[in-house]
Image 1 (cartoon, one colour):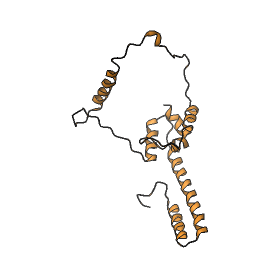
Image 2: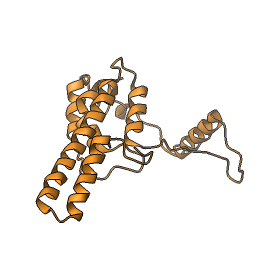
Image 3: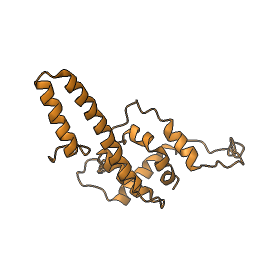
Image 4: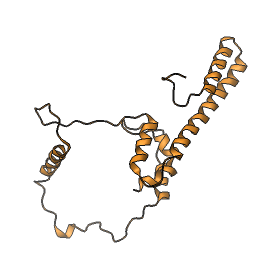
Length: 173
């Protein structure tokens, strides 16, 4: 095993890959095709086993932070780091200063807006509360179009869709 191997590559798969490559080099196409299909099948099984073992062992105690940390780790994504600084300065702002700066910016955008009239304050107001259940969250996750490209900082959509029922509970918290 090498450090640059994919997470799902096992010694069994490596042996099958070598056998497949040798069959191809020897021109034994029937054996090559058979081994090619077996390699694909073993890789699919190994990926499924890896994800089930890692996601299946997550605690369902409602700790959404741990769930997302694990999802990001499984997908190989890195959390983007954002360093805010004042204009004309290279020094990084503290979190509270950055939050105040952002808050001031957006508050200043609305200074020129007219005050909301009281007759419009209840526009669209409904006395019916929405009920969100794990089933409804899973249904929404399953409706994700996984063939579309995710954003640069998003986890793979196929993984979210594949484990929609597992992700539904922590997403409620």
